[in-house]
Every structure is written in C-alpha cells, then in structure tokens.
Length: 441
Image (cartoon, rainbow, N blue to C red; front, side):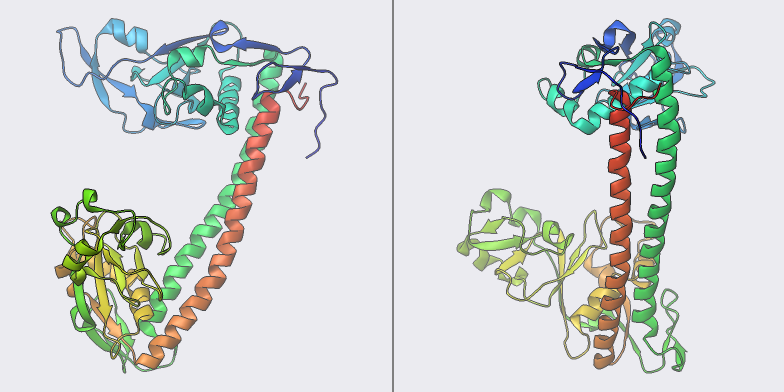
C-alpha cells in the first residue's frame, strides 16, 4: 500500500505523536470533548424514586465494539439516568482494567447508564468520536497510556488524566476522511486475520482428532476391532486391552496438603518445588521455589522422578507434562498429581498422549457431571479407562503423533505469524492515519 504524505510537517511537542501536518492542532481532549464518569454501582434500592436501569461496565467495552448483550442492572433515579445516560455516538472509555480501551456506542434503543469506571465522552463541537477512538487506540499501541497513568495508578485512566491528554486535531473534514479510511482498511485486515485464525483453529481441532484416533484406534486402519464398552472410547483394535488408570500405574499421589507446605518454608536453594508453573508450559527449567534439605526429608513421598507424569488438578486441568531426565531433585506442590507409569504395561509418553485426548476428557466430563472440572481428584483419575496396545505399538503411536503434531504446529505457527504481522500493520496504519503521517485529504 503506497500512500502520499503531507507536504509540510511540524513538531507536535508530544513524544508519542512526533511530527504532524502543519495545519493540524495539538490540544487537550477536554477542549473539544465533554468527559463524565458513570454512576457508582448501587445494587439495592435506597429511595422511593429509584428504578432499575441497565448499565455498561468495563467488561462490555471492547476495542471498537460495545457488547450490549445481557447488561447488568443497578438502581438510579431519573436525574441520575439523565446525568449518566448514554446515547448513540457517545465514545465510552474504560478507566479501569485496560485503561483507554474504547468504542463508539451505536444502535442502543433503551435507557442505559455507565458504571463509574467507564467515561462517557461526547463532542462539544463538530468533532468525530470515532476519530478520537482511533487516536486512543494509537496511544495504547504506543504504550503512552502506561507511561502517563503510572503516575497515578498503573491500570487506571482517571477522568482528569484522559481530559488533559494532548492529541492531534485535524479539521473535521480530515477527521471524517481518516475514520472512513480506517474503517475500510482495518475491515480488510481483520478479514484476513479471521481467515488465518479460522485456519489455525481448524488445525488445532485436526491435531486433537489425530491424537485421539491414534491412541484409541491405533495406526492400522484394516485391523479387526472390538467394542471397548466405554462410550468415550468406542471401538478399539481387538488386540488392545482396556484398563483403568489405577492398574496402569505403580503409584498415584496428590501433592501435599497446603498446610504442610507453606511459602514461608521455601528457601533460595535446596530442593525444587514443582507446580503448575512448570507443568503448564511443560518446562522444568523455569521457577525458583525451593525447600531446604530438612523439609525435603519429611516430604520424600512427593518426590519427582524422570518419566513421572504430572497433572495440574486445580483450575487448569488438562495441562499434563512428562518429567524429563536430569531434572533437579524436588517434590510436587499441592496443585499437582503425580503418576508413575508401570513400564511393563504403559510407555510414559503414550500415557501422556492419552491423557490429553478427547476420549479421556469426555470420561472426565462424565465423571464430573454435577460437579466441576476445575478440580480433579485421585478417585476420578483412578477410574479412567485407557486402551492399552502392546508396548512396541505404543512407542510407534507416540512417534507417529509427535511427527504429525509437529507438522501441524508448524502450519499453525505460520498462521500465527501472519496474524501477528497483520496486527502490527493494523496498528501502524491507525497510528499513521491519526497522527498525520499519511495524507487522506
């Protein structure tokens, strides 16, 4: 995309803006926009004249979009509804969460106010609120908000800070041109990004299918099959056995109770304490939690060994890692479960692949019905059914899965790279258009 530049530029005097066209002004937002914050949350009626009214909070305000579905309700009187009420064309700006996140309100057909952590920004003159929205997005991309809000509070953008932020002000006609240009061009970019994201998502689903097919059906498509009598598994090769997890491992153990391993007992060196920090990324080289030798001696039953399988059992179930060779000696923390596979029955890597499969997940969902998948215990895990091929075939399955997943992940990585480049181009285009680096007259 080749775009022309303005013939004459001047220094804006603002770091994140740089040079701007000679005819553009640099002013504080408050000079051309009225800014007010919403009403403090009131969850119960306090006076007779109050009525329930829908309100918009920070979670409803996304970049360039406002989600009006399932808005919460608070109590307010008619004067408050007039004072804090919103209308189409208002720019709503988050104070908290991601300070500066903003979108223009459109197609609202009901009385609605904002909570106090959302600013209502309304033009005083003939300014374009969408232009200001893109300017705020440009500020976000420049990290300038982080710099100016750090003086007050790291994650907030108070009303006064927003009002006193200096931004570029082209003529209203140029603002409209910038908005029209960005709406068209960002829509094209978003369309390409969505295509790559859809492709990446489909590939992730394909990876799940590849794994599940391999660990439950094997690698020979013409082999004789039999009913596993487990709904989540279905048919399996006739030579496979079905065993519960408790009969496939030598040991299953949950991490120590929280009260028996307190953070004040940690030390700067000694024996490692492994947790979700290592299991989620499957990286045992990171982390710096240790316990002294004396404490380790009392907790040796929780010791981790190579080829143990560690499972995150709280909050992020499904994160599973195989303990590699040559790790630092250490124990698991209370948020992990440790399995020691029986090498005569199950190849450790095969067990890991099965535990990550959709068949395994389906069994866990069934077992947790009426409960929660956020916490998995030993009793549930021990009753999991696993198809067990001959050991040599387990190794072949693992090699096949690793090879196929590697190929799929390479394509996903390329998709993600494309998405990232498009995101960078989008940000650059918004910044260039809103600071006058391209002439859109």
